[in-house]
Image 1 (cartoon, rainbow, N blue to C red):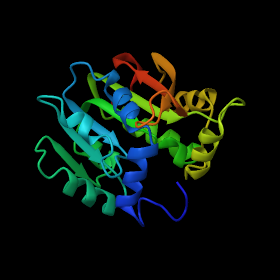
Image 2: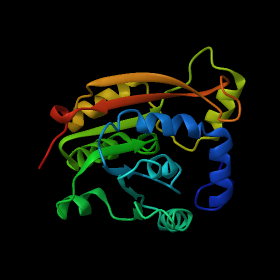
Image 3: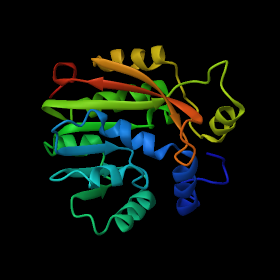
Image 4: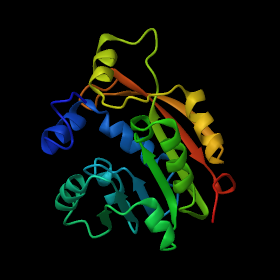
Length: 216
C-alpha cells in the first residue's frame, strides 16, 4: 500500500481500497477452501477483519482474529460488534500457546511478506504449535511478479507495502526451517471483485495437514 494510505493512518480508506482492488472475494474463497468441518478458527494478522465476513457466515464457527496493531483490532471489534461468534485480540501466538489454546484451523493471510526470514520462520513455528490434533494450517501469500504481468498488476504490486515477497521456493525454505511441510500447494491468479476475470495478482496457497504441524 502506498505510504500515504496505510492501515494505521487511514483505516477506513485502507479498507475501502482493499474491498475495491484487493481481490477480497477471492481471498475469502481461498480462506474457506480448506476449512472443511473445522469450527474453531484463528486468523493471524487479521488487520481490520477483512476476512471476517467469510467466517461470520459459517454456522457454529468460532473465530479469533489477532493482530499486533491495537487500532486495527479496535476497528475490527467495532465492525463486527453484532457478530457474537467473532472475536479480536492483540494477544500474541506465544501468549495463546502459554494459555494452552489450540485451534483446528489456523490461517495466515498475507502476513509473511511483511517480515524478514528469521521472523517469518518464528511466526510459522509459533503458528504450527496452535494447531489442534487433527487440525489444519493454511498459509496464503502473494507470489512475485511474473514477466508477462499486466500494467495493472505491476501498479498494484508497487502500492503494496510488503518488502519481502518471495517465490514459492522461498516460502518452502522458510517452512522447512520452521519444521513444517505442506501437503498441498496451489498458485492462484486472483481478480478484482468488481471486474471478474481481470487479474490483479497471484496468491500462493499452502495447506498443512494433521501430520505436518508441530505440537508442544
